[in-house]
Image (cartoon, rainbow, N blue to C red; front, side, top):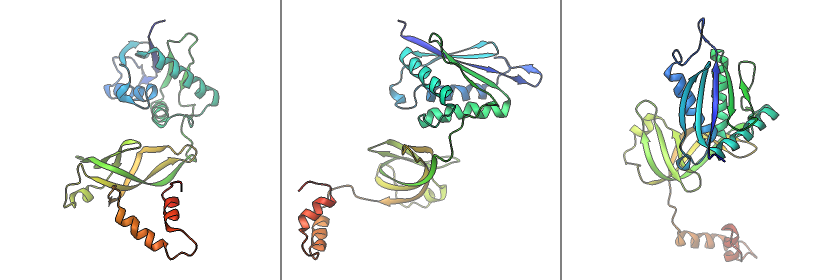
Length: 257
């Protein structure tokens, strides 16, 4: 079996009175499609993904992306589920957002998108102005988060943000007011902090919409084990009658007796 397969995104529509072709399809529109395919096929662990090659052909415009057949098979199954349930709430966030980009373009530009794969009897996913492939807003709720880790980047020319490397979910980018960064007397780069932020979270899966995160405040913290602090806790707990402070503290720390 061939180890390479492809997905094809066919775009139909008009530029004024003319049908769209590779000759009149703007480079910004091409870039937008290129950016979404990475999220369609590999929503996570992008650093380890195989190569994705690209070609553009007539008819009206056919964007072809070749990559691992395993990824193509998986994506064909995902499209089948989208067509069956007629919504995208079950998708990983990057994949759902990519589908929404196509849906927005279909509505804005009156384009029709037809997505197929090289798999025999491939599923066909059609997106046009009559479809409604958007995430259910009721699933995504406002939430508050604390991210702890090392600050790896801070700043930006027009839109500032902080990048913090966490142990559990990797690097998180948080939109941050420029004024906050301007007022910092000490360099926060490569130092450990906690960052309090707000954003959207899936109420069913707990997934965080990383594109929605906005800075509230920075928290200085020490993640090292502090025995003196724990001794003080033991003393404070000692006034509780009939409670063994050592057992109580172990319960608080989640340890077995």
